[in-house]
Image 1 (cartoon, rainbow, N blue to C red):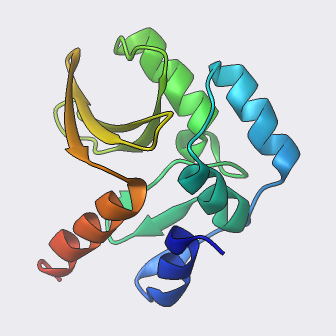
Image 2: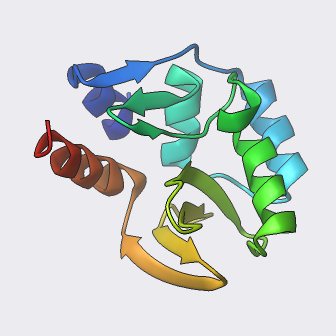
Length: 136
């Protein structure tokens, strides 16, 4: 079991959904013309998507506003998100998106500018939970 899956299973404040199949992952990668990092594949296969506090992450087996393919394709068209990245989270503030590349590196995307913020999805999740728990 991957480290991110174990971490999510141990974290009470994270709500999970229904995991997806290998076939759904393959179809999503084709639709986005990219390969997901293994960490993201493990996450969506185990949980589909997650939500915690005010955050809702994209994934598979979810409603359109959380579906990684629909959200990413929309942001490529409307916000100029370049290929090679997918949307992990739409912060809903000033057009800020949290995006991930094929290596699993996490970036903040806003108005055409990409800035690295974390080395992995798990690192971003850990930081996000810590920050949000401070306000509860």
